[in-house]
Image (cartoon, rainbow, N blue to C red):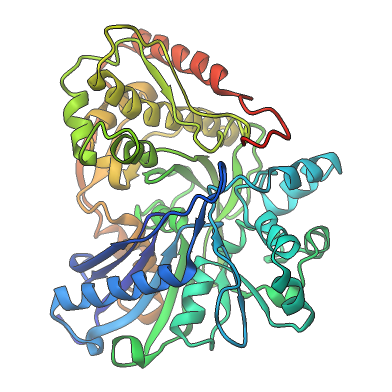
Length: 504
């Protein structure tokens, strides 16, 4: 391996901070990971400690480099991919956050979303930002901080307030305040960004009362944006690739052509389809977003999000104590032929696309005296595949074209049972790559292109290998009957929390 031919990819997720070191052949040379605290101040609220996120990310970086037995001299660039929409606010003079980060899953801004809807802003927001009105996105979180954290207004008046998604916070910290930037993919998730003009939208800034100088400069996804301080790994290293986690996964799966789609089975489920150089606006609750921007050329995507996927498996482990580890869910589920009529809807924090019901909550229907924990485990796994089917069905209709296959990644994609069930429901091949770290690799690819580790997209395509392709096996009529049961169960979960209820 030549000197300076490794890319250190920081994969900052919802439950852990990770770092993956890739070589020039796309192989993994080293990894590091550390979980961090999930903070739930009250029902519907989800927070993270941004300082803890930074500390765990630094630990993961050093662990990956140590495992690979290389030095900082061998690293050509650092890339960052991150949990999106999670919002940090800090003081530009001290670099210290003024409150906990508000996580993408948090529903506290539902009343603000009702206000936006009542003011008739739905169409403007959709056509300008590509988004729908939902607490999921960052803009309402920023307004909540301005309205509820007294120090925020003081800092705003003094031009010291800084807002950022996790990529911005990490880059600001790694460069010791030298670089205050975000890329187009993360900017497109704020409800403040015009995805066609590629700039912060003045009207939306005014709607939320957010000063422009409290927002970072928006840059391409690929390109050097700053230098990681030598105090971190021993020498200054360029930070050269940034993308929100789902955009990075789309790029890492080599979905470079219009019509190609991927799904990431992470904490949530996220289906993205490349729509080319023009945005496609959905009539079915999907999001229009920016896939990436490389060499000044913007690629757009349609996206559907299900908020709870892998988090449902974690719930089985941590809250219900039904399993000791995620793999046990698969082993349990394989001991039964089906879910025994049980259907689980994991609407812990509402339902995402295509329902967008912030007042939905989780439910289990169809249980009998004969329902066992194995049936329950299988119902949880099946619920993830059902949600992806909802998203893919809407995407096919909006895009006006058939999707010939689905490329998959993320922690839960290792489940053969779930991937087979997914292929059965969708009636298309489900392609799982040999190297499932596609999110981290996508970000690494963006950085590698910027510093010359890889010369073009064709070179990246040649690195991807399929580990297994799942083809439909179950009879279509059986799958259609099961899917009808899912839709009935969703109906039970919808609108569960009454508006203005304190239990939301």
